[in-house]
Figure 1 (tube, rainbow, N blue to C red):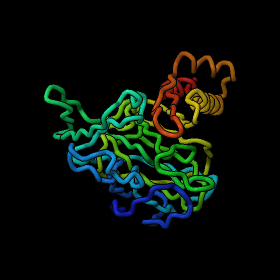
Figure 2: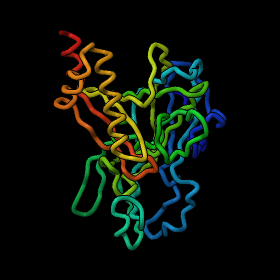
Figure 3: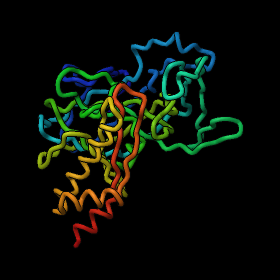
Figure 4: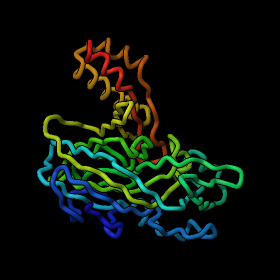
Amino acid sequence: MLQISKCHSVFALGAYETPALKVSSGSEVIFETHDCFQSQIHNEHQSIDQLDWNRINPATGPLYIENAKPGHVLKVEILSITIDQQGVMAAIPGAGLLGDSVTTSEIKIIPIKNNIAQFSEKLNLPVTPSIGVIGVAAKNEPVACGVPGEHGGNMDNKKIRAGSTLYLPVFVEGALLSIGDLHALIGDGEIMVSGLEVGGRVSVRVTVEETFSLTHPFLEDETHYYTIASHKDLLQAVKISTESMHQMLMTRTGISFNEAGMLLSVAGNTEICQVVDPLLTARYALPKKVFQSLMES
C-alpha cells in the first residue's frame, strides 16, 4: 500500500502546500503521523513551556487525489488505525474548561499495551483510537491544523475511527487531504485540551464523488449518520449541524419540514465533539435505521 511518511508534516491546510503524494480515485494510502506535540515530549519531567508551540498539531500530507475538483466530495474510508505503545496528556494553565484553575503544568505519559491504556496504578482503560485532525485544503487562505471548519481540520470527533467513512467538500483541485492528531482515547468535549495523544498509522481509501455536494463534513459508521459543524459559538455549531441533518432527511425521504423536525426531536441527538479549539465543533447523530424505515415505507 502507498504510504506518506510523517516527515511530510504540514501545520496548515491550504492550496499552497506541495503534495507529498498523488493518487487516483479509489486508491488506498497509509498516513504515518506524529502525536499532536510532534513527538517533542519524551518524559514527564519536561516543561510544557519549553515546547516549540509552532510545531503543535502537525498533520501528515497533503495527498493529491486526481480528478478531485471544487464542488466535488472526497469520500475517505477509515480502514484501520494503528497507534504507538504510549501516549501523552497534559494539564496546561489557562487551557481548556478547567484551565483557569490549573496552577502548575503537568505532563502524563501513559503506556498502552494490548489495547489497554494504563492511566494509573488503579485504572486501566480500553483504547478506542480516533482521528483528531483530518481535512482537505480550505477554501480561501490556509487554515491552521489546530482549527476546524467546513474543510474538516481539528474536529476532534471521536466517531472518526476505523470502520467509519468521512465525506469532505472539495475546495481546491486535488482536494489535498492531510491527517494527524490521533487519539488513543478522547472524551466528547476534550475538556483539558488534550486527549490521550499518540502517533500512529492510518490506512484510508479515497474516492472522488461527483453526484452530490456538501457544505460541511459528513460522517457515517455502521449504525449512524453524523452531520458536523464548527463555529466560534457552540450553539451555532449545534444549530448548523442540526439544520444539515434536517435538510438531508427531507431530501432523502421526501417528508415535510415539520415532520422531519419532529422526528429529529425524538430520534436523534445533538452531540459535542470539542469545546477547546478556536472554533467549537458539534455533530448531530441520527440512527441509520430511521432512514431505512422511511425509505422502505
